[in-house]
Length: 307
Image 1 (cartoon, rainbow, N blue to C red):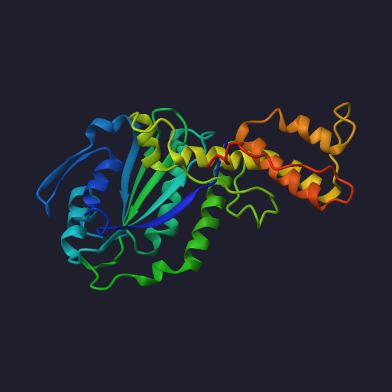
Image 2: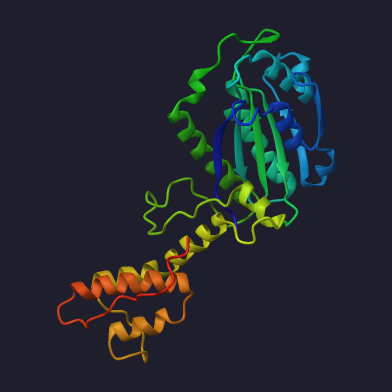
């Protein structure tokens, strides 16, 4: 199903001496020599997962700005600080309901209008992971505008404005929905938070590439991030049930127990251990506040909450 995602972050040199040249090679599935450290970054072997990659640049920009190696080596060599901010990266989820061509065109048109139109040079790479899930786009953008044939001496700090990010988030949602409508699809995405949309659900945390790699390589059988996601999903599964108890002290389940607390026990017995612990804690707390409720002892010795 179509999911919304626009993640914007700064790609800096301070973390483990990262190179934006290496980042470009990885995202575009290519081989690029890093002139700053005299090292070749070869990710051409992963080309299969990279559907398409292109550099979009403002009009009248120099030819070298359209070449990945020349562009990002110029950025690397031009930034002297050990903690230099090298690029801004956007990660966009693209609807699996669209074809690869439609996905790439949607992201490219958005980047052209919102980023390149404001003076950034943007390298866009569409990725289709091996498992077939989570198609997404990486966009690496320059932090400086061009001044003739060179980058400006000053970075465009106005691009860091929070209000601009809010606008990007909304415009990307509009772009995705327009593409889905054009393709004759009924799915739609929403850039607003769950709270702003009136949805009573805890946001699920991201698993992330680090935890995924640990599990894929067999280093950790069940990484903590995977456990946390399952825990949050469990809480969301029982959240409506908990709200019902909190408001009315009763759950209507025909033919299951004589009282609401008996029915809650039956329900709790059918869910996983992490959910059961959470439900029992909430149930016990509510009962202790209810006049005439049964005296419920602590669970004692039971497993702790899954995390």
